[in-house]
Every structure is written in C-alpha cells, then in structure tokens.
Amino acid sequence: MTTETEQLNAIRERIDRIDEQIQDLVNARAAAAGEVAHIKQQSGDEVVYYRPEREAQVLRMVKERNKGPLDAEEMARLFREIMSACLALEYPLNIAFLGPEGTFTQAAALKHFGHSVTTTPLGSISDVFQEVEAGNCQYGVVPVENSTEGVISHTLDMFFSSPLQICGEVTLRIHHNLLSNAPSLKDIRKLYSHQQSLAQCRGWLDRHLPNVERIAVGSNAEAATIAREDPGAGAIASETAGEIYNLGVLAHNIEDEPGNTTRFLIIGQQEVPPSGEDKTSLLISTRNEAGGLHRLLEPLAQHGVSMTRIESRPSRRGMWDYVFFIDVDGHKDEPHVRQALADLEKQAGMYKVLGSYPKAVL
Ligand SMILES: O=C(O)C(=O)C[C@]1(C(=O)O)C=C[C@@H](O)C=C1
Image (tube, rainbow, N blue to C red; front, side, top):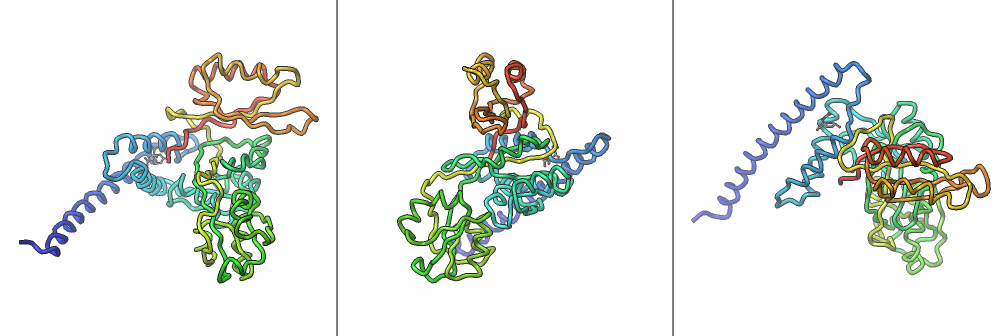
C-alpha cells in the first residue's frame, strides 16, 4: 500500500514534467513571436508591434477551444500574460494611464495589456492624450463610462480635438473599499475620494458615515495619499491602493450596485484592422432642424447596423446644438457598415470616426 507521501510525490513528479513541457512550449511561442517581429521590421514601414485585432482573435480562440477543468476566462487570463511577455520581447510597450499608481485605470491597463508592459501614471485625462500624441507612450488608457454614474464627459470631450484613435476597450468590475489607518469607522472625521466613487457609494455612506464630511479629490489614489498622512481621514479606493499606500481596509465592497462596472478606452495612433467582432465609435452632429437625429440615424437601420450606445453632449457652438457619441456594431471596413457610414456622413453636420476596434474579450 502506498503512503500519502508517496502518492503526493508521484503526482508532483508528473507536475514537474508537465511544467517542463509548458516552459519549453512558452519559449517556443516567444521565439515564434520574435520571428514575427523580424518580419515586421523588414517591411520598411513604421513598425507596429502591438496588434489588437490579432490579440483579440488569439484570446477568443483560447476561450472557444477550452475544455476545462480551468474555466475559459481563467485560461484566457493566463494566455493574456503569455502574449504580453511575447510582445515585450518584440518591443516593450509604455502605457500612459490616469494615475497615480493604484487607480482602477492602472488595473484596467494591466488587464488589457498584461503585466509585461511599463505603465506611466499621469495627472489628468488630457495629459494621457498628450503623452500618446507626442509619442512618449505608445498607448493610453482612460475611463469612459460607469454603469452606475454614466459617462466620463472629460474623456468624450477630448475626442473633439484629438487626432488619436480608439484601439480597444476594456471593462473592469469596480469594488470600492473604505481605507484608513483609523482604528474603526467611528474614528473617521473626513472622507476623501474621486467624486464618481463618492457617488457610487452614496447609499452605504449615508447609512454608515452620515455625519462625516465627504471631500472630492482628483483620484482615489490621491485620496489614499491624504488618508495615509492623517489617521482621522478615510479614503474610498481599491484594495490595491490600500496595499500601495499602506492603509487598512475598514470595510470591503461598499459600492451600492453589486454589478458596478467601468469601461475604459485604449487610445493610440494606429487604425486597427477587423478582428471579426468589432465596434465602431463615432462623433456626429445633426443639422439643427426637426427630426434631425432620426434622419441622421436612418442609414444605420437601412443597412442592418445596430447602434449599441448613444450619448449626447453640448457642442459648445450654440444653445441647442448637440453632438452625439455613437457606438455601432461592426468594423468600418465591413461593407454594410461602410455603406451605412457613407450615407450617415452625408446627413451629418460634423462626422468623425473615433475608431473601429475589437470588442472586449476579457
Ligand atoms: O502576431 C503578431 O503580430 C505578433 O506580434 C505575435 C503576438 C503574440 O504573441 O501572439 C504578439 C503581439 C501582438 O500584439 C500580437 C500577437
């Protein structure tokens, strides 16, 4: 009869042999990515190493063929990291994000690109656009909408004047935590956070900290910095921010909506070819007349293109002049989308394609 130790040793030896094979295969994959890089360099044009459409296809294939016991999402996350390491070998990417360190935007950047990129924190959404436009960072990550609080209008407004393209999207479940070095909730005198996070936790705060002053600051990480200096202060931020800024967690998951999700955009200089499952974002305006918006959107229905989102913003040109941010299903190079957009452009006052990009996979 074998003892438990002998059984464990046998399985662990099997695991060692499997690991060796995985390691050889991952290195073979990295070498293949190196060959791809070599061919890209020979093409003569400006070399684009990061290929969002190919990455989306690779991750979708991983999910489709997955047989378990690991679930498809988990397997895709592992491949996300393998591909991230392969790309870093070809060319190390530098990603600008709305900082400081420890914001949800940084978590979104790492979820999208994997952990083998360098992330550069910047002070504002416009700084992120500027660094990418200047070429100091190849891509940028900015928040664009939250399921409870709606759009982040500053990001949308940047697209009026920026030449950058949307190259991708990533969504992140947002969990808020009450961080502080105070011994308990009743010792908190002031509470700091980004205005969106304060809004997303309003119900919980009304119940648990009704008399504590709420102070909006530039980011959750900035709030954590303040709370680190002042034990009478609390901050609403992520658990990661708690670790980075050395703060205790007095309450977990205090967001009012359990499904609280934020969507982020990846911005860059490149146009992304079709991946098979894409979205197109547009900025358009109607001529200022009755039924204008209805007429403007008619070509979408005529060509069977579904609109998945519409957001209106004042154009700042006149009292009643609005522009619309629209997302449609499909890539601008697919024939039915191309025809719909050509007809729409004829009706529109302002018309700008912000980018066609793969739908979020992870
Ligand atoms: O297929 C490519 O173009 C590659 O560079 C390879 C690879 C990969 O590791 O699979 C790496 C980086 C790109 O963003 C896409 C895919």
